[in-house]
Image 1 (cartoon, helix red, strand yellow):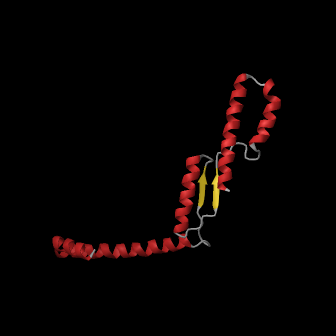
Image 2: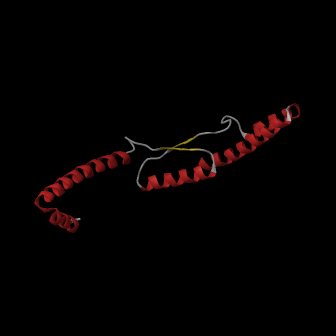
Image 3: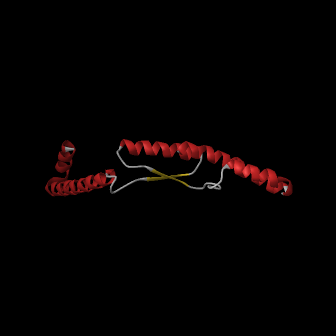
Length: 132
């Protein structure tokens, strides 16, 4: 930056030189603050990064990429939160077993909706297994 600052100072004159020096002081102060924040973010005793995703391909892929990049920067990332999970306490096959017994009593529209819900639950279960 020395060459650039010399040219700017020459262009601005004597008063401009003071402005450039003030700008350099502010940049040095800002660099100190950036270093302090950087050190705090990299300290796992003070900071951890919690990733949040949904159980779909692109979200899982991007979360995995984020964790890898943060790890390269030595930033702690040992937690992942998965939102929008259908029936998190039940396996898709539990729903299928229930549905087989109740299917005949349900209207056609309900059968269609439950069938789609089961298909989505199976997809989510598959992606959640990839996280663990």
